[in-house]
Structure formats: C-alpha cells, structure tokens
View 1 (tube, rainbow, N blue to C red):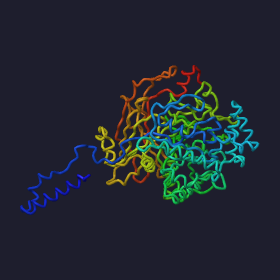
View 2 (cartoon, helix red, strand yellow; view 1 turned 45 degrees about the horizontal axis):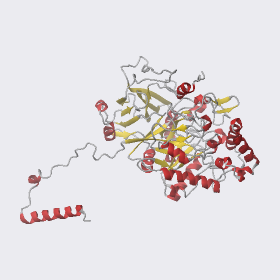
View 3 (cartoon, rainbow, N blue to C red; view 1 turned 135 degrees about the vertical axis):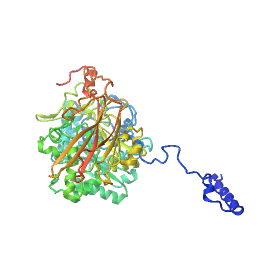
View 4 (cartoon, rainbow, N blue to C red; view 1 turned 180 degrees about the vertical axis):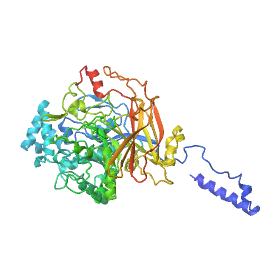
Amino acid sequence: MRNPLAVTVTLLATLLGSAAAQDPIPSAESLRDAFPERRNFSPYAGRNFPTEVFWGDTHVHTGMSMDAGAFGARLKPVDAYRFARGEEVTSSTGLQAKLSRPLDFLVVADHSDNMGFFPRLNNGEPSMLADPTGRRWYDMIQEGGQAGVAAAVEIIQALTGNSFPEALAALPGTEAFRSAWEETIDAAEAYNDPGLFTAFIGYEWTSTDRGYNLHRVVIYRDDGTRARMMEPYTTLPPLGSPDPVDLWNWMQSYEDRTGGRMLAIAHNGNMSNGFMFPSVESMTGRAIDRAYAESRIRWEPLYETTQIKGDGETHPFLSPNDEFADYETWAVGNLDLSELKRDEMLQGEYARRALQMGLELEQKLGVNPYKFGLIGATDSHTALSTAQEDNFFGKHSGAEPRPERVAHPMAKVGDNEYPGWSMVASGYQGIWATENTREALFDAMMRKETYATTGSRILVRFFGGWEFEQADAQTRLPANIGYMKGVPMGADLPPAPGGGAPSFLVAALKDPLSGNLDRIQIVKGWVDASGSKQEKVFDVAWSGDRTPGADGKLPPVGSTVDVASATWTNTIGSPELIAVWTDPDFDPDLSAVYYARVLEIPTPRWTAYEAVRFGIQMPS
C-alpha cells in the first residue's frame, strides 16, 4: 500500500516548485490571508495534564499473609484482583461479596515475613506437621472456634516476639518463599490490563520490633520480569532487618541491579507509639541526620493516613482547636498492646504534626524527611477491599459480617483491647494520572498528585500559586486554570514573583453514591520564629447560608441521619464546592505546608447498617 502522507508531501513540493519557476517571489503581506494563524477550535486540544482520577487500594492482604491466614482468610491474590475489578466472589466465611463500583487499581501487599507459611500449615504439609509447634497449631486451626483463634494469636505473637520456630519459617531463598512470591507476581501479571485496570506487584515489609508498627508497603513500577530478579526484603535476620534504613538500602540495591523503580508507603502510624515519625532518633537509636532525611523522602513520597485501624490525620491532644480532630481515633497502644499509649508519643504518629516536624527538621538538616502526600488504604486482611459503610467486610476474616462482630474484640491482651465496633470502613486513594497504567499511576504517586479518602469517591482539585483571583472560583474548568496559574497537590510553590501571599484554588465534587458536601477546609502548618510548631484550620467554602460565629467557627451543617433505620437524605449540603483562598497570615520568612480537607454531611456508620440488618443493639 502506498503511504498517502508521502504522496501528499510530494505533490506539495511539486506545486511549490512550479510557482517559484514562473512567478516573482510574493511579499509576506500578500500571503497573510492565505496562511491564517492556526488556532485550535477545541479548548481541550494540546492539554497534557492529568484529567482523570483513578480509585484504588494499595494495601490488601490475602490468605498468603501469615496473620490473615491465621484469622481465617482462604482467598488468594487472584481473588483479591477479581473482587477489585468488580466481580462477585465468595468470602472466606462463605458470604457473597461484590463492590458497588469497581476499583481502578489494587496492590496485593502480603507480608514478606514468612510469606506462604500459612497455606502450607493449613494444607498440613509434612514439613509443617513434623514440628511439634506446627502440629499443635495445625490441630487447633482444624478444630476451629476459639481454638483456631488461640492459634492465630499464638502465631502472631511468635512472630512479633521473635520466637517463631525456625523449622516452620519461610525465608527468602527457600522453595516455600519463592513459590509464594511467584504466585503473587503471576496474579498481578494475569489481572493487569493497561488502560482498564492496574494490578501492581507489591508486598508489605512488616517491622514490628517491640510491637511498634513501622510497616511499609513496597510497590513496583515494573512487571514480573524485573520483580522476579530479587525476592522481597523481610525483617528477619540474617537476610532481613526491622530497620527502615535497611529497607531503603535494599530498595536502592533493587533499582541498581534491575533498572526498575519502586516506592514505599508508610503504614498508618497510630500503633507505632511515636516511632513512625521520629524527631531526634529512630527506633534503633540512630540520630535523625541528613542521610536519614534524604533516604526517607527519596523512597517514601506518601503516607497512609487512614485505614481500618483508625484515622491518622491528627489527634485531639495535638489539635485541640480542631472540632473534627477526634475522627475514628485509635490511641490504645502499640500493635500487640504490650505498651499502652502516652501523650508524648502522639506527635510521632500523626500526619499533620509530622508535616510540621518536617519543616522543623529541614531548618536543622537542610532536608525535609516528611514532605509526603496523603493516601488512604484499607489494610484489609480478607482479600476484599471494602471501604463503603453499607458494604464493609471488616479487618480480617474473623471479623467478616455477622451479628457478633461489633462486640467481639478485634484484638485483646489482658484488659486492653481493640473492640470490633472500632473498626473503620476506610479508606481509598485517588490518583490524578494521564492513564490507568502501572507507569502513569506510579509516576503520579511519586509526584504526590494523589489524596486520601475515608471511602467516598469525592473528586478534589487543589492548586497553589501567586496569581489566583476570586473570579477563578467561577470556572467550570478548575484544572485548566489551576495548572496554568499554579502547581497541583503534592508540589512545591515556586518563589513569589513579586511579594504578596500565596493563593489557592480548591474544588470538590460529591460522590454520586454518597452524601452532599458540608465544607472545604485548608489546613496550614508552620514553625514560628521562636521555633514552635503551629497549625490553623480555615473554612474556605461551605454549603448553605451559614456564617462563622464570633469565635470564627462555622456552625454545623446539621444532620438528616435516622440512626434507627440507617438512612439519610441529601436535603442539606452541596453537590459541589469551589473557592479561591489567600493566606491572611502569610509570613514570607516562615516555611509553611498546606493541605485541603473536604467534609461530607453526616451519613450512617457501618455499625448503624449492621444493627438494622441483624436486628441487634449496638454497644453504648
């Protein structure tokens, strides 16, 4: 077949050659009408910024994780991807489960420590039963009921207490570990469908030394070819370590050896007892120096700020003037409840204070280790990523829907417990990206153009700059103006061109299946001239005709929730909100951090739906 483009070019050259041979060279003025300036008719032509938000979960465990399996999970990575793509699956307890809407991406993040151990134990493999402890655990699990629960607790305590039987361990280099990692990779490769659904390869590195939760989810930008070149890093010596610095060094080794790319996302820190965001020294006693700061921000651009085990944005002790600070707060102790929480631990556990601490450390070290973006994830141990109040399958398979789960402790040690009702139907991550592929989503996460949600799929745009004006709040295309005049969420503001204060364009559109919007807030954090950490929450857009009171606080939006029937109406609130806001207290000599928080009107919690479905009374 002839190339029509080549033919056209040839004809054009011939015609131009004939004109040059017969006529005098025309003036530029005489040709102006023949060559009008090219203007795109479509206002969207030439647009190269992200125009779609993709929804997903970067933290889901299956029966391949030791603790998930011990608590009853029998689903595999393939089941997790099928469910996330919108298929109906049968849960480990025999319930039919399906999402109201498919997700766009998923990371199966099974624990690398003893990956594949539990399926071998549950299957009664001879090598497991030859060990007396393995035999006892197997018998207890087969018995089920409280015996099975006791076995699960023993298994987890053995791992966190560094007393796991060596004969049962599945370590890197063993056939058991290698087989489990291959199954994980194969599932992601089978269900990854560029443009339609992204199945990331990943795992969770599970540092729990002394019960302090310092877990990280490790995510690959790569396909299975590179991911197979090095087995995952664990916390178990001699090949692994519980020190995050050693994990970052391993990640560097992976990239050097394979030419691939990866990132890590720190687990919600509310069970770290202050060690998730150290200010002076790390858990290992190492001083927080420039090298630590550079490594942390290089490998950890994001922080998991909300999930089933509580919300990690802030705490009432840290933010006493924020009326929404006590949202789904978990502050009992560390992961295994061996050490209860003390107030002085809290500043090293919550995102808002960590962002302020990062500014403080930057003054000392020249690098900000805590300049992270915020995401939500479930940390589900059922293989089912559910973050919808009326479709919540719980933390682990022992806490899947049943009348008893609200009163049954999710974990209990002595008199201390995490009660079942305290589980949170949270969260998901929204990513602004150019397409739904591993590469595009990964790159968006690296530039932090992503945000956390407790489950509702609210569309949020947030831009900062020096040239936004109030008229920009009337636009129907906030992204066009936002990218033209400023920088998006996750970015650094450039220096002020001529003084003045920064301005911000923020827009939110409700989830069509959830409640209307109550308000948009901008949270500012900074370190003042005396070195004290400061914060302030500004209401910048809200529904209705409310006006702030003398204390500057906006009156509550109200509530239409009928708890007894677990219903509500969208007769209050707004479907969308947009505003341009300028910082009234800006000091150019002080660094600051800003993020947006969007609140819905009140809607029923999962426990209200459960009370209606099962005809039960919720604990007071």
